[in-house]
Each structure stands twice: as structure tokens, then as C-alpha cells.
Length: 136
Image 1 (spheres, rainbow, N blue to C red):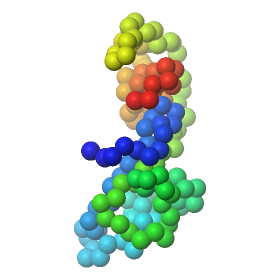
Image 2: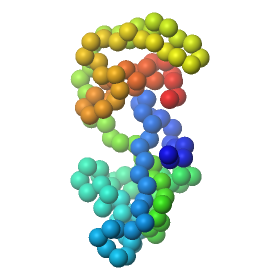
Image 3: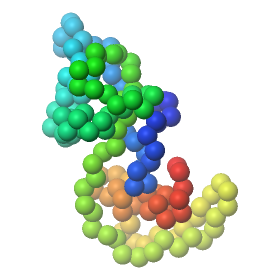
């Protein structure tokens, strides 16, 4: 289990995290820098260079990870994913019951319950977090 994220939730979603491994299993030497490891870890899905330049990768203390930082094994790196546009799912979430520990809702049909795949912001969990100001 990772430690608590140093980044706040954004758009109702917690920051994602990755943990640096001991070493590259295909090479006897570890990566030279954190930037090199991040490029290896996210070869096509993430624009690592612009995220590094923008300080969007942070370590456990919230300090931005720099491209040239020496590679450090067993470190957590936190970041927010860029979200794609999603078509809105019509309908309101109707709160049936709410107390300090539980929220029960009646959801519209076709609204995803949890954020997965192409339905992240348009999911019950994320919409409730945003609409009700829930931290987690």
C-alpha cells in the first residue's frame, strides 16, 4: 500500500502513483535518471517530457521530480493523468440516504458506477465526490 498522496484530488480523482523498481530486469545497471526511468515506464501513453517540465511528477514529499534527478529505487512518484473528454451522461444522482459514513444514491441508467476505461469523470464515484465535496 502506498503512502498518502502529497497531491490533492483533482476533478474528483486521486493522484496516480508508480513505484521505482530495484533495477531494469533486462539490464545489470539501473536507469541513470528519474527522467530516463519515467520515459521507460510510460513509453507512449504519457507525455513525460512536458510533465517533467511542468513539475507534474512529484515525490513523496511533494517535491517535483526533475529530469536529471539521480535514479532512486523503491520511490513513489505521484502524478495526475490527463483526462479525455467524455460525453455527459444525462440524469441526476438522487441521494437516497446520507450520514457521516455512508451515501446511498439512485443513479441514472448507463452511468458507470466506478471510474474505469472511457468512463472516468462520468461515473457515480467521481460525480459524487465533486457534487458533495467528498475527499475520498
